Image (cartoon, rainbow, N blue to C red; front, side, top):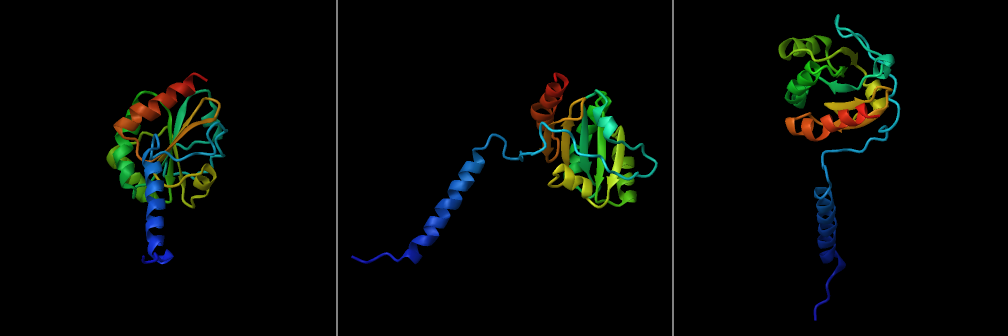
Length: 179
């Protein structure tokens, strides 16, 4: 009987491990959700610079007694265009949406808003990405639901599609209102 070399079995073992990890990942409840160490904690400091003549925002705005959203976005971000109509809808419903323009050129950012509309109650630029690091941002778009006392209720990474709006964002807004 021929002896099987460990070198012949190694690729099969590696494949089995990767297949198992992929299967576990696929069975997660929401594969696009990423854990946030900040959920349940006060929102980190708002440190933005003005974006054109748009109204800014600060820490006090996130603790003003009203549920709000903080949305990280950029003009060069394709998924940001996809979610933009839903941000416009939330703003039209009276939900304050605060925008953080992430590592973008001011002219491009203002052009984006001129083209698609401006859903933001207040907006600022994070040209260096420092504030994004403090907030734990992985990339844009990312949106945080903040309760009226400035506590993070939800962090959502990715574009707010219609499905995400109904199944994730709206329930988080309601949960924040009930606090």
